[in-house]
Length: 98
Image (spheres, rainbow, N blue to C red):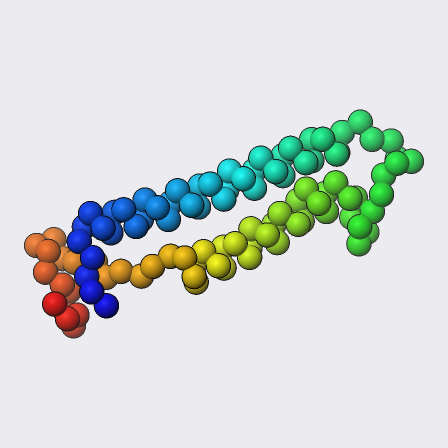
């Protein structure tokens, strides 16, 4: 695997961080928004259940958790790239090809 230049490595890390922050923000907005909209001002008569869990908790908390888990697996195994780091002087570490 070729050694990336520090600027390429930084750009890759920055891109991965932005994707992770965007995914976190999307999950936060969806979860808080859904739970706020569907969880408040409900009477016990109009409360419904999904798998024994109140529907607003199922769709606003449980489903986003599963989606975030699947996203994390894809992100770690498919999107992130492994890149060897160089020593401080810019040369590859021991055992690595130049």
